Image (tube, rainbow over the protein chains, first blue to last red):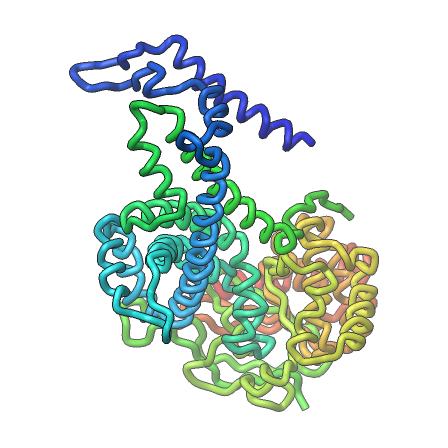
Length: 286
Length: 255
């Protein structure tokens, strides 16, 4: 109940900030030494919140389906790709982290490249992946554009999981490791009984970052590969009409934001049953 | 048969490097079954190293370590000892019960066996009512008692303790000392106990082994002849203070 209330208050604050700036801001933006430091506050750049909301109800094009339907179906399409990329990326990240924990030499050899992988600009990467994978096919089933997008999404999301999970796997104290050794437990059982459970507090924040990265990867991936059907494509299409119909592009952005929220929510749902011990705080003294 | 037999053990860390440290030099020590032996000495005298050698957490540079008549490595694989550290080191994601069950789980015992053994252990340390609590809900003294229950869960003939009460306040510490002695008497476990505290060593032990640093070695062994059971009256007795003085002198002479 209190949580729901704080969400509502947060939303209202956002709206108040937006409309407040529109009310007091300079319609031509504030320019300081030839650089615009505050955005234009006119209706073209910052449409009213109610204009955006009402745009959802009106048709996309004259006689077409309403915008909310278009945004919703595009969001669901991208959600599917994001989920696929996220799961694949998280799996790769986990395997890398375990390999790096197990073998010092792998950590030394691999970690710089893992970090390097994230400095490659996404827009440069997308056509490369599309080009390499274009000739691939699964039997009679050829490679699809959306698969390229999922790969880009996975490429961005494996990184926080690999780095966070490695840190988590290395987090147990020496005494915990010695304890497992005293029980004659080998590497595998130490991993299952000690390192995995100990890494959960590191894993979940990493998964949240990975979720956000997967969304960004999917949206940008759609745009740079020209994949149809998703929210990234919709943002691109609607932004072309920004001068004639400024509220429209914001509806697509709301869809993208919603996508991010759904992914974050799914990660939290995963966290609930696994982090029960963290929620009990009353200390007994005796 | 002896509980622990250490012969001519030396331990050198980083041999041949600039950071070479002789942690232990030519140490001999024998512990009889059921005996309570404390290792005492200033920081860096190698008492924790000696404990880790017995536990086979590290391997000696030279010399032999036997536990219950077996080489230390074999004894570790057979879980011939239980160990407790200064930090209780409980797994925070497991309840008290599941923490005590851990060594039993790794031994492949059945669920029913684990349940009954854990109940017995928690009864022994007086925490039967807290089986379903998480470690974060317990005070430091209670956590340490869980760690002792965990160390004793497999009924090992030997208990190794590395300053287990070092982080506790004086009152809790004295109460746990009395409890520990009662537990050891009940289970017949031999104990090797590393500590900084002279009075703790004297109160608990049949024998106090005094060590000195650089290189770590045993400089004196003091037999403690106090009546048992050891209770508050013993803590106040002149014999107790005499023993404390003897150990203190041995420590001074060593330094």
